[in-house]
Image (cartoon, rainbow, N blue to C red; front, side, top):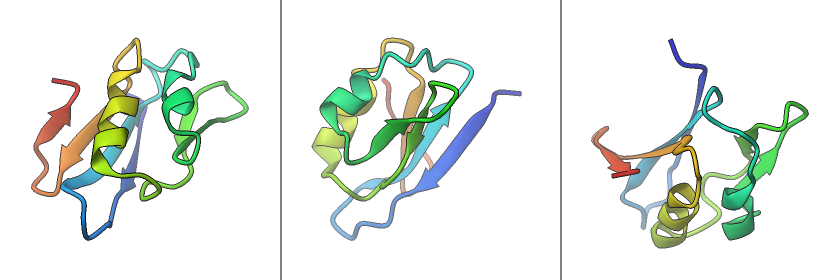
Length: 86
């Protein structure tokens, strides 16, 4: 079973309902932080954690997830369908 952390998103203007970080895949490249330091930071294990899932718009959140070289950031819509990575 993957070591995953889930973060719920509750912005009214968002189609994204959940961010999932697969900590087994995360290598600490921090490309997601380069796109949005308001959402992510690295913890003491050099793995990404979400600090504010509602800080940015959907388009920027998708860009941040797609910037991950190992696809460790998964985005789901409010119905539970995976929307990123494709």
